Image (cartoon, rainbow over all chains, first blue to last red; front, side, top):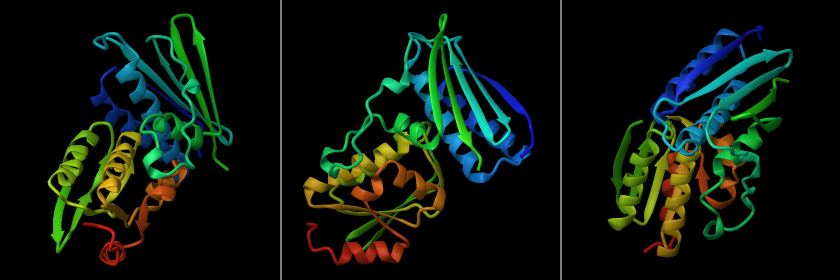
Length: 139
Length: 117
């Protein structure tokens, strides 16, 4: 894996997620990030950014979400910054994965995936911005 | 994403390909739930050509399985790529949904299942 970073500024529009996924995958291939780790980071960023775009803003026109991915030793660091309403996704209750089909909740799947895919997820409110940082160990 | 339907006797086989994500999940949802509404009770989703699924797509499988169960029906998924299967395991769906290695296995499971109407 080669050292490097990418910063992507996306209009807050769900149709931009595909572009985000493509850019993250290109970055990963260029920097020879192992496939499983790249898949995990791609999916986690998709979940976080989709959630921000769909629910983060009163009106999403003109709003931007900033995504940064950086290789750091044996870690992949990712960061999502948005100026939407204050929201800590880590406060979403963990769905009970052990219950029967009829009792399984439809909500909370995205953030649960993020928690499972990443080794560390942290949220902070920085002024008027939400900052979510994620780490994935490569080995 | 592309969706194909192929009725084999009393089993509806649905093939979904490429990316099942926030941009495509609603189309897949209306197709799959539309089949249940039209009376299909034994449904196989062949995921052999599906290479990416996010929570919006996962939710469609959960919705369909939940809707079929009280109707005496069954959803079976087959041929998941390792990366997609990993996501199903991670979110606990391998506990609550029937997943088989091949389409033939999926058809066998549904045909040997006398519970469906």
